[in-house]
Amino acid sequence: MNSWLRSLAVYADRRIIAILFLGFSSGLPLSLVYATLSARLAEAGVSMTMIGLFSWASTAYGFKWLWSPLVDRLPIPLLTPLLGQRRGWMVLSQVATAICMIGLGSTDPSESLVGTAAWAVALAFTSATQDIVIDAYRVEILKERELGAGAGNIVLGYRLGMIVSGGGALVIADLFGWFAAYAVMAALMSIGLGTALLSKEPARPEVDEASLTRDPIGWIRTAVAAPLTDFMQRPHWLLILLFIALYKYGDALLGVMANPFYLDIGFTKAEIGLVSKSYGVIMTIVGGLAGGVIVARLGIMRALLICGVLQAASNLVFVAQAMAGADLSVFVVTMSVENLAGGMGTAAFVAYLSSLCNVAYTATQYALVSSFMAFTRTIFASGGGWLADRVDWVTYFLISTAAALPGLLLLLWMMRAFPQGGAVRLATDKA
Image (tube, rainbow, N blue to C red; front, top):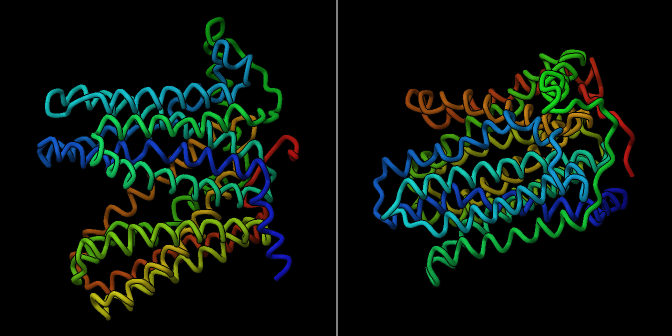
């Protein structure tokens, strides 16, 4: 027990605390592009069809790998010489994000829907850029055994940022208006900005650089082709990608049909919001922190297995929920188990994705693997509705549990074939 308690001490490390604040800054803009913006549009009388189309404004998050090589390699005049490559890009993206928040808050959807859409797209782009550089910074400042704690704190910070810009922004808007809500969110970006300015620039290995203006082909080779070539040189890289696609497949099938399931068995929207969206978030945060401790104690691969088994087994509580119907006490247990296990699995998985990155190309490689994970999860889960139309809920959740098994079986093979899981963290185990 004492050894496990000592593992919690990693969360007191200055760098891990910095990741918490950066995670908050990273999560803050998301609801302003999604849920909070939808509420604002609805209040302005925008049609449901148009509100749905506004979800396209957030596509920048799914395509951030396209400009991640620029974040990895392109120096910013004045900022890069003064702060370094990572902190320079962090400061630029955070200031730009705050400006876009104010710009979005200053528009009136009822008068200029195009203007609102333009600022929403700009906010998603600057926010996604911030995500790229924060993920790269997190990977580069931590030792491999600290990646789990870093993943736990990034999940915690991100969730807190979403809560503040979700429910918090709505409360402020109700009291003082929409511009005040967005202006307060912009001011809160100073938390991440201050963290970036007070933190140290991570050490990175020297890479032969080519000038974008003098040798664009050479720059593309260094910034774009080299990270891809490097990734494909590791053993079993295709199986690694397959594992990334499959690890959270069962979780994705569950998540895509969770709200329809709650409503179908008789829960009210208020009950869903209170138990699933509020209490559930708290349990996800606890699970994320617990997952970080497990990674620190047992290593990434064993943590992936333990958290993956728990994550898959948690789907079975939905079978009990389907049998019990709209029983609120069972619902609390279901949300406790599912969100706790899901948070643990996410922390271990984020640590694993981080370990795959060669720190010479961190921003590009992490953007690639995380985007691949998100894309495949969306594609694989898209058939959940079709399946739910053809089977009862008990059968659906049994199938979702079985859907987690291929990823776990592949993980068992990976643990025997290459215990490091394909990780190639080059350069110095940083202190």
